[in-house]
Length: 142
Length: 230
Image (cartoon, rainbow over all chains, first blue to last red):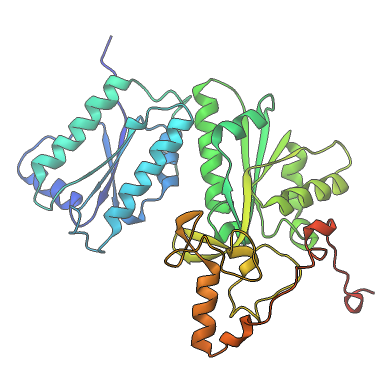
């Protein structure tokens, strides 16, 4: 039986995580193929509902990757993102899901290695948790 | 505005147990402003319920809807909303207690095919002000006999834990109330404000006991404006 390959959604800040993804590509790092990257202008734009909807739509895990604290292009977007991830974690826990399916982390712009490590880390974590128990079938979002 | 906060998820789950078609109706007025029962919160609760039901392999439909104001016929008489309510087994109202009661009465008046069960998704907490993003504080208890002209615009009925009309009491210390170091002594604030206004003399006369009949103590209140009636 093949190993469970989790579907991961990564909300990535345009100014750091996405830059790190670019650098990772140029440096030849392998970005896990099970991760779907969603570019956001700032992680402060990621709402609690986006995180819940990602799980509802079939993701097994979601990660929000922002700039380091104090380095947000919009000053405090990453602080907001962290708090929203924490709130979403408590909401999914109430619904019976593991809060570890939602993760928050940060990378500096040139942090290609850390970026890949974060994605590998959540993939490993979610693989150990198993498939999202709330998914009957994967939704297609048009 | 009326401030509320969402009920614990476990309580909502126990209210909807045994029903297979759930409709969540948000309110676009006060509870939207206090981020407890608006469109966003309706979607969050909907998402949370679906995740919980799907995890438990329960085939339960969760629908979402909005009414601009759940305490007014004019905003409730929406054919799309009424159609959704007709198809639901239970309605979770994300409005304040007024909205829950009003929508129960309204839906049961409009829909005659079956009785409509409406349950509250929020705990209505108080009438308050938005002090900062994410912070609300009680400012009025609706006592029906406003005294703010005598107290420099600070309500001793609401903001004094004892609702004193002649304060402060002996529990006031460094401007804080004895009930909590985070609670300002209302009478400390009143005296400071009256002093700044040069109206400290206002608190010299002893206020007589308050007539509580215009408050809720006199039973449910009602206002009829004859000039507005036909």
